[in-house]
Length: 279
Image (cartoon, rainbow, N blue to C red; front, side, top):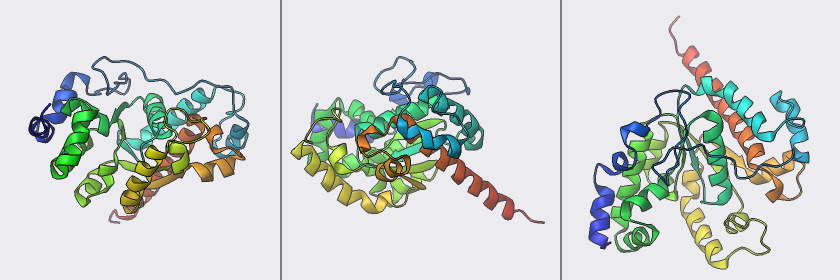
């Protein structure tokens, strides 16, 4: 695809509707989940089904759920059922450097909350015809690329019941940051040396090229990350759960922490709304 054609496709006002036809928009609470990489409808599962982690033991008291004696995914789904009414359909935007932990967490949250899952970078790539054309556009015409990121966020933020893994462009402009305020934004803070390992989290050494790219992206986006409604730090959660190896923290454990943060945020919002009512 020529750069000019890619730019026109990306910046057209019909970008997301072409990828998200009305047929697939979630109208009911029990709607199935849609994978953004395909037009078929399917349930999205967690990245791994495992036996209860020793780190889960400390979560029973804080969540009120016996997560040690049950399937970790079932524990997350029960917590999601309690949290869902408080969300009232508000979308969740996960920001932070792109990595497998953030992606797996987003898919698990979508499955548990019965939301749709999307990756904003993937939507842009699909509209451009693939990763190579969109990378060429980014290098040749950064303004058009940034406009395409804004267009995707604009249309996603107008919907509800979505879990969106947002790219770094989502936090690099005031316009995009304002669009994130249509939902709940959460910074998934993962150490760069872990994020750089890609889909092979237990490899001995991260890719130097990917590490340098992630570091540059992190430094450019750091101030934007700080504007998120909440921060989920992999290091802090590992310390809280007594996990010496950060990579042993599961998506289920992260999801429980995210849902707890959402409960806090919605509770504070409700209190502020009640306080603002006239006597």
